[in-house]
Amino acid sequence: MTQEITIFIASIFGFLAIIFGAFGAHLLKKKLSSDQLDSFETGVKYQMYHAIALLALGLQFNEKYSNTVLLFSIGVFLFSFSIYGLVLSGAFGKKMKFLGPITPLGGLCLAAGWLLLGISFL
Image (cartoon, rainbow, N blue to C red; front, side, top):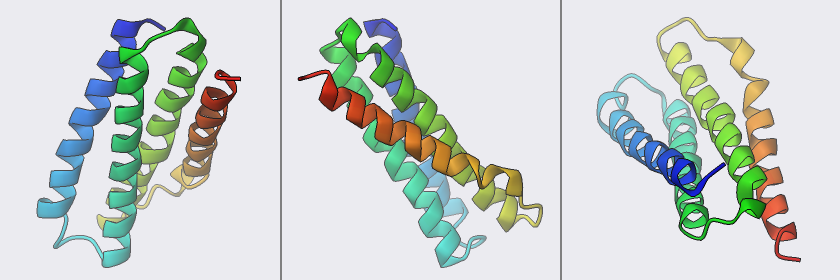
């Protein structure tokens, strides 16, 4: 992982979090139940939190953060994007249930990334 790639990933995740947040708040509000909307917003929040964390890591880049960057990137993709898929497929009547087990794997990657980040300072 390099500084440029880390900042690029952060910027893409941040951009998409804004787009998906607006999409959820304006276009999906009438299509989703309140529980579905809450789940969708959780995906957006976690994506943005980790975009900001990746940006911070990119600005102070050190090779020791490479595995954290990788875990955050995989975690956001698995966690947030599986939630988007579950919510949207459920709202349109074709729920992709196979995404259900993917969400906690993404959460595990995010948690492991934070743990690894903490350990890198010891």
